[in-house]
View 1 (spheres, helix red, strand yellow):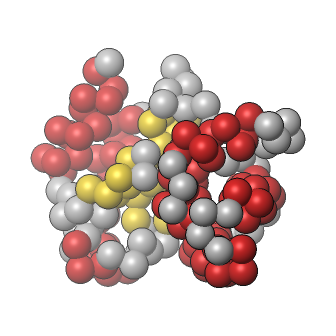
View 2 (view 1 turned 135 degrees about the vertical axis):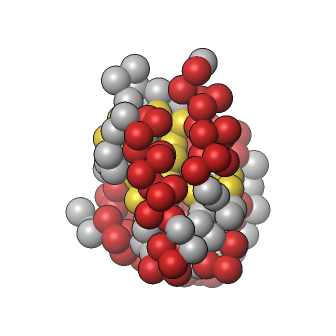
Amino acid sequence: MLEERNEELIFRDRLEEIVESFGEGNQEGAKMAIKECQEDFGFVSISHQKQIAEAFGLDEKIIKTVIKFMPSIKESKVEYEVICCTGPRCAKNGSVEVLKEVKNILGIDFNETTEDGRIRLRGQNCFKKCKFGPNIMINGKFHHQMDRKKVQEVLGKMVEK
Ligand code: FES
């Protein structure tokens, strides 16, 4: 498996290449991206499904349907996937405090899932959105300029459920 630090960026570049060679809207290309995602990460998470759908200009439901017909593909079953930027520019903008608060509220570290199996936490070196940092992504949606208070607001709702 690729190193956590680089794996998302490598996959993003690879996805661009696949879209270029198959063309937007091509389901065979989407299948290849899904397979590569599985090889790199061990499963195809909600945010990866969204990423693949966007890259190919396809609806997320189509990606879900494609996955259903690919028995070897494992979907991540968590309800929420939280990815925090661990890159140096977000760190300069205060992400160290943000990361501490995220881990504290969820009660888990990177690459762990909450006991109830609902929330998985990961780190990513850089989202290439440094000027809006500290950044976190939840189910493929960015939350910019995070601070402790915003983390409490956003994650507090998720853990209360
Ligand atoms: S360092 Fe966080 S988005 Fe680049």
